Picture 1: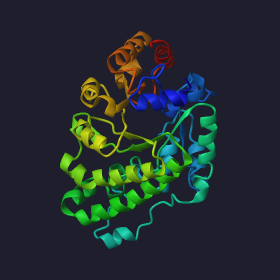
Picture 2: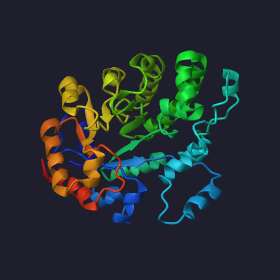
Picture 3: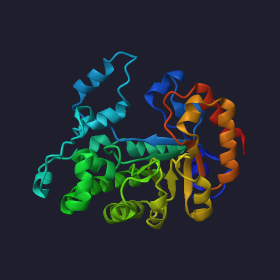
Picture 4: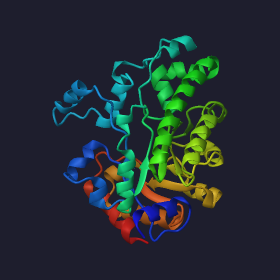
Length: 348
């Protein structure tokens, strides 16, 4: 069984030959395995396809390249995205649309041009190459940290956007309609390019629960997310839909299943009860992640990681499970990452 077959079976809640796996790194972790690419070095089951960054960022890229090696200002791809959207959190809480008071003022603002063909010209070819090599391929629309909620509050400023959702609903609906259109356009490109998994995400939760009420999420975000999924799946009926939010988003999981989400991520064990979700949703929802707290990855031992992996496989797998760290790895010891990979490959 190759990686693509393994991933598609697991995320369709059927049993593969072994549980598939993925990893997520911040750049600080990469020197430990340089010059290798993590997916190749560890033999991971998923490859991730991305749109090209926008043109006209040469000065900004030279600035990033010129920083001292011990200065970490964040993930380079994320910073390029911030630059494209004119989002500058280092300047304070206001976003580029914070001052807008009317829909007309919002309409005067130009959102990034994600439709430029150069940015996605090579996506279909890359997907085809990885498929030919037997890998599963996932891809997500370009966005400002999240397709709808996160992009909205970063553009408007958090306080403004939360007030829009309650007191200035026409502004919220207008902005979210524009963001949804961008998302649909990009999702269709990815679906038609043949990705196996469409990655959608929005951090709508904190460790103790949702940031906004379930009713507000259902009014503003659920129908728009449903439209993205419906149109993407119309273009690619066998497309698997992935939804990410950090924190505890248990309160909207039934809604996500209802609108066609196949797999949720990262199901952080200090925030969500993966076993309870498995028991409730059975063969309707797969879990991607589930392994370890940030403290376990950074301060635990390889033996701790091995025990955590085995526990997840025994209680949650093998059907409906793709194992990965439930937190992005930043300064986790290389030995812990290697222990994770080895255990996943040999435990089943």
